[in-house]
Length: 102
Image (cartoon, rainbow, N blue to C red):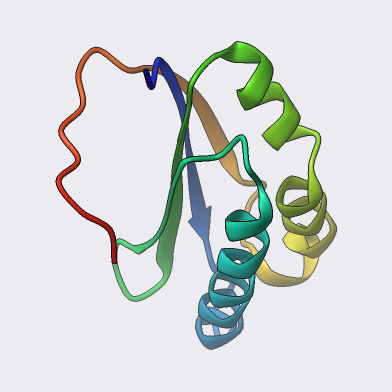
């Protein structure tokens, strides 16, 4: 059962919006390789605001993700791509409906 999640809000630097979108497309391949990350979304909230939502079975899986390659790549690219450091929020999942995959 999915119990915990993360939401990261990413504000692209002016002129870096396409690079942020490309980074998120590339991160999808890394997310598919993480067996402990069953749910992962890359989001475009506005022309320059992006997000990542991912969910996990438990705190141990969430921590593995935070220590993993996507988080490392995100933090390495942050000074180049983002107007401010990524805002990452820990979330408790109270309910979930998932009827398919993309």
